[in-house]
Length: 381
Length: 187
Image 1 (cartoon, helix red, strand yellow):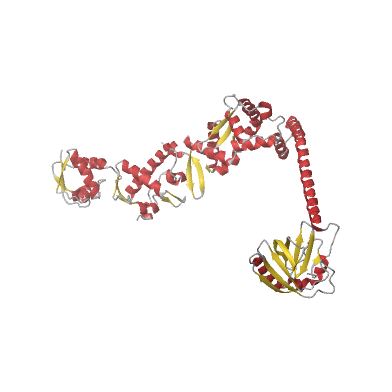
Image 2 (cartoon, chains in turn cyan, red):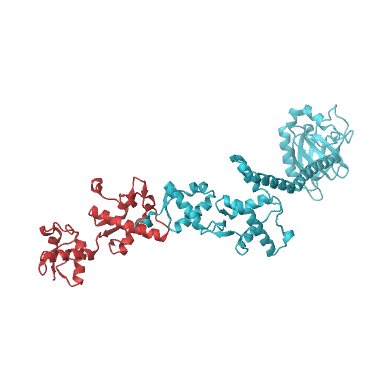
């Protein structure tokens, strides 16, 4: 028992690792019971550490001191034990929990069971003798270091780390809050710049400036329609529809009078920035265009694709445009058509199939892709 | 099989070089026009190569349904669409249940019947008996359109006349390709 040393902080040295631990272990000094009871016995690659959290005491025994081991199976009224036969105490060692002992062996009593597993792990670690390579470092590592010692030290360290994390998080969120506060202002600025550019429209010729202007125009909505203002009934959706109509007016003209509902939803929410609306609300609002006599229509294509269409851009107009393009090009795919009419490929496809349904174009489906031609079949007498 | 020489002076319709011709059009009206054009092409083609039989698998790779120049091929569904349209017009008969081979008349039995009867009247053959062989390969018919007509087509045409009471057939064998027997045209 006198081979044990006090430990202030459980810290493993480089290359050392924990193998197994068991609770409720009592140490016997030879045949005698000691008051080192109900502790946790950890086995590392280098040492045995017995640790009692209640009384805050920790002792350790280097595996290099273990000469021989023996396992005693549990019996009636007797818990399972492991017996460790130890070498004589090294002369250089500092005094431990017991100054001297008449026994050259200790017994470990596993009152919560599990000694077989522990015994196997112990034998395994003893045979590997990992401590030999780092015997010099070991001494330093077991020595107390720093001001915070023991379990309290560990707890303090954890606490400190938590505090740091907390402050990082709150800092991040305070930035976000500030951004949210500024969002309205920024939207107002964007709007002002957009208006100014709009005034000077005639003087702008640069492509880039025009593009910049269009970005700004599609950027901000000053006074988004919210449920707080308009409640949960029809009124909210009506107001939303009205705002959508004004918002989409210029955008939809630019994309040739047709935008898919998904595009509408994305652009509208991007412009709102905060106070986002749900897809469902946008959908309901778009359905109200007609009854509110707004110049937009929600249109469902045969394929099920939903799109918002300006009233002035009916299918016939699109079909006419498509036939004109095909006439000049000979044939076209939806992919080639989409940039020419400034719409998404989905819309271009819908336009082509509308033209096909009207008998204006016909298709050539080959390995080269799906191409559309003017419908010469119908023109042939 | 058809040779290139045979097709050298064949007049392909404009549709043959129009890629959408080889895709079955989803628009019903367009498709009707398209199939109509195909039917005409198949008849003209078969007439040009003087063939009454059509094998679906063979025809798939023949120039009829495969335009190598524009790299387009009428898919098999399309071929059946065309051939069945011809069947509906009474110009085609499937030879088997699997519809792999068919007999094609580029002129309907009624039309043939009319041609043959006109010839009989013109050349004073009414009320006399002709053999089927004479009608097919006789010296008197060398300049007629039905010269070298296949036996089965001839028999169908004569049956039309018989039904109308314009001809009576003798010693006709049930086998489509047996040209023994004769016919008497009635004035």
